[in-house]
Image 1 (cartoon, one colour):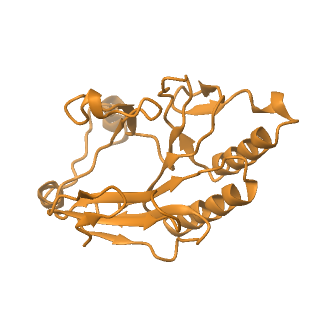
Image 2 (tube, rainbow, N blue to C red):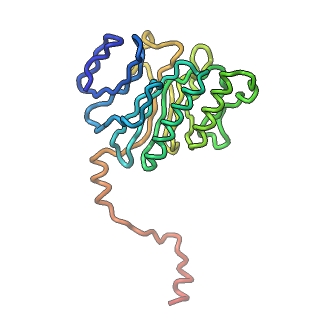
Image 3 (cartoon, rainbow, N blue to C red):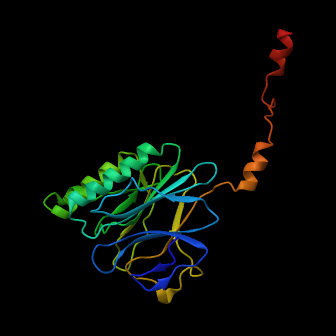
Length: 234
């Protein structure tokens, strides 16, 4: 358990477990914190020395949650983006029975995100118009490959510059919801104007709920049965 973030000199709460990856140079890095009541573990095989990322698996019901947190410092670097993609692909292929969530600051500026036909996820709409841009080519390649895994992007929360820098990809969208984090969680005076705090919510069963579910019995409903045909066949 980590108790101190040396980069910011701020202490983590003592009842939390922290997983992090520091930059090679001074400052920066990524970190995930979890209440120690949840059983969690670092997926050490999902790692690349060139990527600022950390991947953690949390035991939840009815399925585990795997979070891949990333920070992309230079979104023009297709080689770095592809390394992130390979790590994400590795998680998706290995965790077919888990809920997989890829979150982080990908620094994809000037990308227009619009709802897909199902009105449940967002797709980038304007990347093909900038074929001469190294940055847009790299962004387009990465986003297309992640989409084909398939992973679905749920955030369209814009910052002060009308950019969506912090993305949320998931492998299932049935009960996932993304919105701005309420002020009760993050004070307005502490908000980075370029990175709007977001809240991600989804349903999972508690251990008590799981115990109750195990006591359920299967009951058949005959409300729609055709009783006239049943009588004729007797």
